[in-house]
Length: 185
Image 1 (cartoon, rainbow, N blue to C red):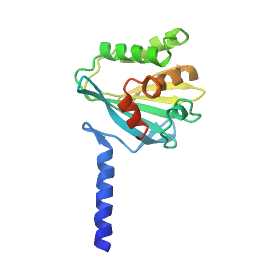
Image 2 (image 1 turned 90 degrees about the horizontal axis):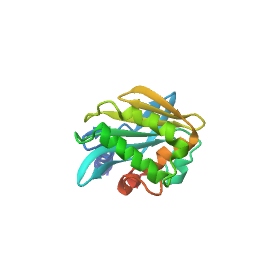
Image 3 (image 1 turned 120 degrees about the vertical axis):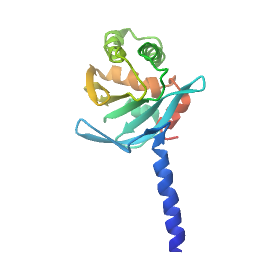
Image 4 (image 1 turned 180 degrees about the vertical axis):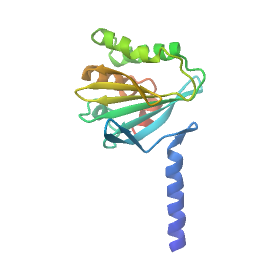
């Protein structure tokens, strides 16, 4: 009986280890930022035209499959993007962000326009396979944006934070499958 339990435990542990590596990217179970520890809620691969582009991971205080509760969270959340394709360029990511915000706000980006421009400036520098972006959302403060562990900017406002989270988790997300994976489905 002990051997059976050990065997089952080994299988479960190996499944857990496999669940945190996608497209060659090791995804940590927790994210420590700004004196807070968030746990991996879910992660998936963003693909377009059958090509994997990046791994998107969602970190939350408490696991949830409810997109609205993440978008309207009163606690910090983070989205991590690990670039896995050489096809991602500054221009392509800028276009994708613009398109995502347009969808997330139903075309009403005017209230966010200046802050969106500041956010997009983060992607002006060369982007290469292996780059990592983290958008750390703190309610009441805004979004701290990091590239490869270095803080680049803070974009203020809960309205901006909600629009940003809606790019991946809203009613018209960038990728439905990625949204489901980030929500642990």
